[in-house]
Length: 196
Image (cartoon, rainbow, N blue to C red; front, side, top):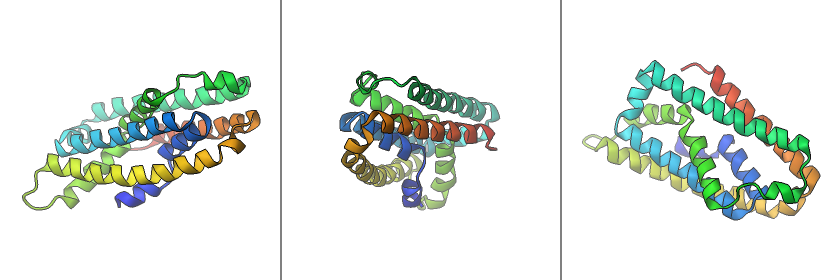
């Protein structure tokens, strides 16, 4: 189940591929580390029972959901805006770069997604062995998810880096930003329209 979730193309995949092809490996690894940090946060929160409270509280869920919607809309619309401004490649590369900027983006993307929390709430009780500590098991489950996610992200980063020469032209960069921005806005809209 965790492996299927990891391999299913989604928001994380779009952000990793775009970052690796446009901003380099260091920032892409930051995104990967941020996403995996968010996974560990959700696993620990689920094991501690916090996500059950989140799922039980309509207000807490809605606050988190709308924070995620706003973040995704801002990120996607900014990519679209920049793609139509036709910034030269050099200007686009001077956006905040490096591992920390990537980590922050990956972490926010994952932590502000209540669907990840809902996944852990649904999965953790079904897999919890008799007598196991829920917090420890939540972290172990998230750790397994991190290992699988990192392995898959490695494939994505290496593939995107191999295609970097092709994707690094100004036209390709603009189209990648347009496609990725549209996908991210779409995920934000889906989150906005989703029922609990």
